[in-house]
Amino acid sequence: MTTVSTLLQRVQADALAARKAQDKLRSLVLGTLLSELKNRELELPQPLVDADVIEVVRKAVKRRREAAEAFTRGARPELAAREAEEGQMLEAYLPAAVAPEEIRAAVRAAMADGATTMGALMGRVSPQFKGRADGSQVSAIVREELARAAT
Image (cartoon, rainbow, N blue to C red; front, side, top):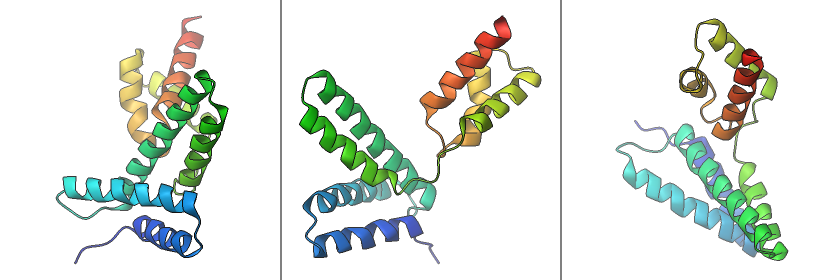
């Protein structure tokens, strides 16, 4: 018996609802996401689980955030606004973000256990927050804590 991702079912139901409501932007965004999910499903030997879906959604959000920044730098605010709006639509499918204080506590605990380099700290802390926190956020907090420990 295979278990289908409940998050995938939610995306499919929302895409169907958007098409019925003739919400073109939402239909486009969710249709693109479903296509990316189907591609990911073909890459894996087993059906998608929620963790796989979250990974794909996180990448899609990151892609849109980067596109919005590029459009802003290129003086195209209307396209940047659209990309940001699409990213916000997709963020609804991500789990709640981890508080920076929780990440900071994990970094301090890893430092107390003897990890003193960026690589060692990232190796210990990143797996704890995989799928729940952005790697750049974890990296920034690790750098801050290393700088604080050096002073």
